[in-house]
Length: 208
Image (cartoon, rainbow, N blue to C red):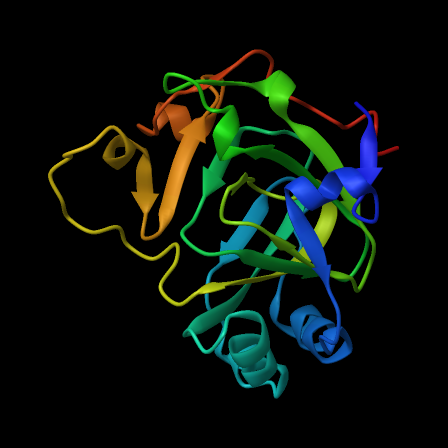
């Protein structure tokens, strides 16, 4: 699979690089608080040690325009697409070492399905802060990684107890987290909406 760099023009459809973020402080603290499994991934949506950094105010005011935010992390090892998710509001990522994002667009969902051929891969260099837009479908990073994850406050916490009123309600997997799974995944087995067709992309060979 071709892996683009986030500096390539094609990335502008999915997100952008954010300048002025004190990534050094974020990554130093990330290394202290996050494990990095060799055979799985760990996600924690909100970490008080990360929220306590001075850069929290910069991100909340200058990137999210004053909206309440949370700073957490995703770490571990992954090479597969597995699922695609989206949120109301953008997501900011920055990692200690280079990692790859597998991305598509909400506009690529047709009749409740999206083919994995619509997915593109983007390499994010170490220390670079990138935003993926609200309309960008994404999931766990690929590689062996520790990634800062910034989102609107409350995202990925327990979902509201609602009776489904729309098709989109069937995708709601957690608070502010709409999820589409490939059938060959643990998420699908656990009851997630199955809507990814085609192969479950695996970029293990491309990461070597």
